[in-house]
Length: 91
Image (cartoon, rainbow, N blue to C red):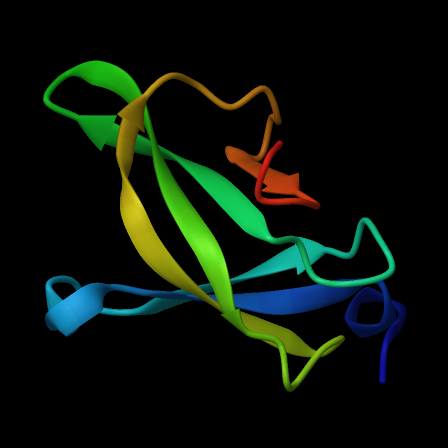
């Protein structure tokens, strides 16, 4: 296992009712457990927006975790990678 695999995990982004294909992305591990919420930059009708995903399965942590799409909201993410990890749902 390489250093990248030890310091990162695969986030699998799922959409309800298969409204869009699921996608995955390797992200850095930033805490002791998986982030509760991931916000990802998303184009939305020409305005800045973020897709919000909530943790639904962490049984494969720290190798992987699954997140369910909750919705798209106006805003931006500050991270240069276009993704923000939040440790608690209230962040």
